[in-house]
Length: 256
Image (cartoon, rainbow, N blue to C red):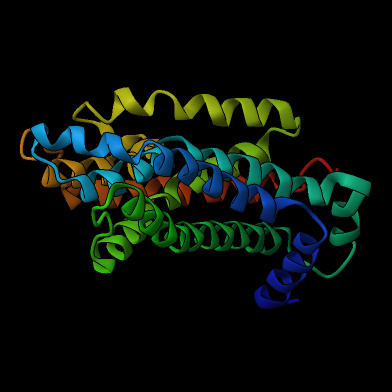
């Protein structure tokens, strides 16, 4: 089997699971308080940020700091469990399938699911901004180019984080422990991103992206500087290392 065939099989498995709802429901929940409390965006004008920019920033901060990483953690565990339940991994390994190729295919599916969540975040933004604008008699919608650019940056910057979560889910067979470690690793991102070595901690990458944009939009906020060097090389190295470890441990217990 080639990589595309394996990816197609994985999507067929997803259709029978609840992963898609885990992706969609948090996004809906995220926008509800943003709409209800949309009047609070006018209080931030003293910080030099417009209400429409703040409406966008606050919701995407909630996404980038916790909601999106937490969804990735749960998705990695569920993708692994589709193989371990009913000894599915044994059935797959009995076929002429490379465990390494299967591991890579599942990781690609994880990234595709993450992309779906980001697209859904964009889709929900527009009706949310329209409702909030109507409630406050003020245009809270910003340029689509900013939305697309920042969403793309959050997604691309999250790939090393996704690789780390995938490694944890692959190496630790007990779901409760892998979920616990994944969620616990998200919390320190607030502290790490304020240090000079933020680029060595992939869990803070998406949060750093949106916070840097907030600094650009708010005149009275400190601006986080994004330096591609050494960030990009280190992010690539972290991703490769995590994927290598994942491939080495994927299905290792079942192959004994």
